[in-house]
Length: 270
Image 1 (cartoon, rainbow, N blue to C red):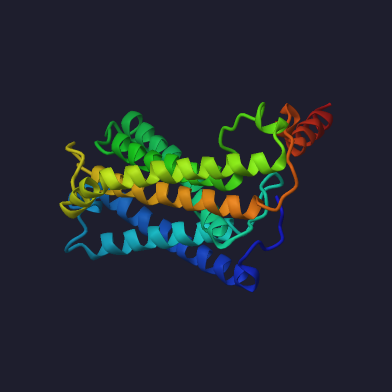
Image 2: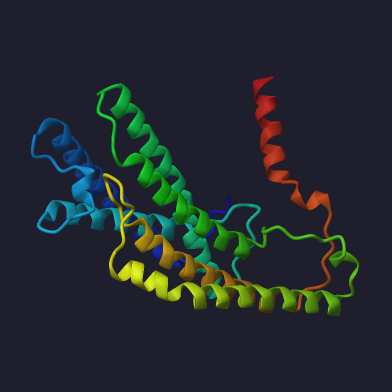
């Protein structure tokens, strides 16, 4: 993990301090709400978390969660792993931030499942929302991971023919690939825009006991993120245009840093 600032620069320290403060406030608010749910007959449940009207404590909690997620994503995006290429354009930074949102989302799914297990088997109070919330988070994790894969150029590519092409033919292949991505994006947005607008406009829900607005949020998110993927593909094409010819082999997938960490761990155990 590279510790140099990727893009925040002198703002890294203020963002870190703000993140710590907001995280502490979020945890305190969460403990208060969870404690009230279990100890008070009028406590705030997850049903009310989706319906914050007239409940200022719920609105405060939602804003604190949003700020925590935003600040954590900004702060974590200022570090890149040893195998992550350095960002080369403004959209790359946005993709890095979105990738950290997805990373936090995976941790969120684990916490939701842990809460469900404890609530079900320790307190004998199974939830009505854990499954839907996990699906909701996972949908955004899947979409944002696709954007990150495009930015990292780690999507599936077949190099058998690409490697034997001259550079001008490789560029032509890249242009065709980006054109097809844009054609798919245009077709998807053209065909699904009205439906996504309608679902969001009426805030369509999932139809379960908890009834979260999964269709109303995921459908528009698909169109927005697939558009970002197409823009990212175009950005990659422009950035890679002047690169020298690339040749790929199975050794490209070998993570030397991870191998070295495993070797060091084994040596320490022995």
